[in-house]
Length: 77
Image 1 (cartoon, rainbow, N blue to C red):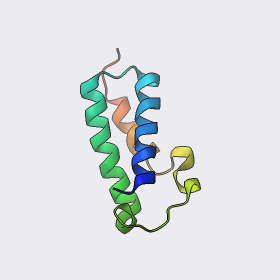
Image 2: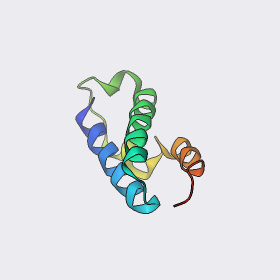
Image 3: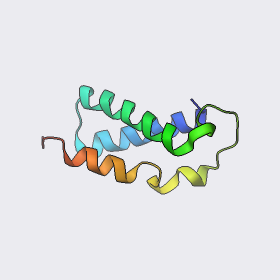
Image 4: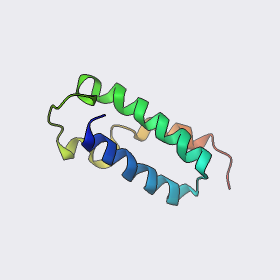
């Protein structure tokens, strides 16, 4: 996985974990989902050494619609 994408996934997970009070099983599931979303969004660049601009990762445009849907289906804690 592209290092900058991996770092962004970890950042997003930490933010969502604190925001939604996710348990460890939910965090693991979320990580797998984010990896799939990133793979689909970034396509060939996901595993390449091609440069990915930090701006491309900002504001959550690559994950937001899919993750909002996922989080809306979680039971409230």
